[in-house]
Image 1: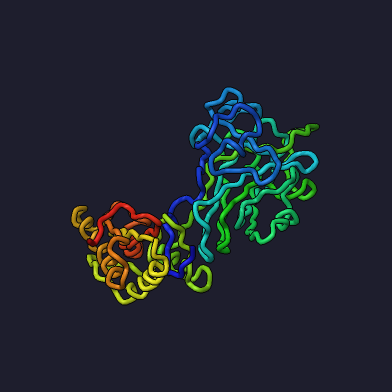
Image 2: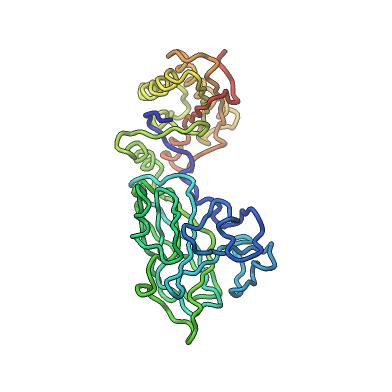
Length: 370
């Protein structure tokens, strides 16, 4: 279901990686190669058999396991994978982000690695591949560009993070990170070494051995420090025509329904945007809308609660005036209890003084006008 609106999607200020420290799992790992089926929100993009370690297990445990000893500094679990092995064998980790990245916004990707004790080499670069669609490629070798483009219509943003011999550290967790500007198509992220053995830069840590380079990985993050106002402006032009797809039962924020301090009156720009929502609801008579008002954190909690309700009701009443029946419109307020960004600046506070909406097939909890 698609409607043309100026929207800001919730959650831009948080880590966009789901299950970032690999703590959530379906079953405690009891054997090798269970990462793909055990770790929630994560997968393996190829036939490489990535491992999952957790202290709940005696076989695939932490800190001691078949690859050496490494305490889990970010919880109880972490992943483990070969980034260099004979015959170009490779393993990877893939995760779906909470939300697709916004074109033009600067992000930082980071993760922690530790070289396993039973490795005889260490790599000098880690690769990070963002993709629009999930990767599922039938290979156990390195994930080359030729293989990427076997998936018709997928889009990519690839980068390498190069370091010195810190990558050869087998005792500590080493932070790997870089910054980049999003292309706007990034929804999945894959970590690993995308080069064949012949092009992989190595440190040799042991002689006369063929164990390869095996790393533990944990605490993966994709965040942005760009100002909230910049993000809001880039959302509006993300696909060239200031449009966004609306999914049922998902919260969105009106870009042009920001309120002045201590005010609940609708402005003309707000009315223009509400007209588009009205048109959508009018053409889909079975849909319902819930309006949710918010304030910044300036002022007393009780007063902010009332003000947020007034803002939500003002939007609900305007939609009703345009012609949407009362029983299809619910409204409520949350005061300043649910900010989407920091309140320390006026730019942040102005974004927190907002109205969200949810479109659904059934009425949601909230007050009705009738």
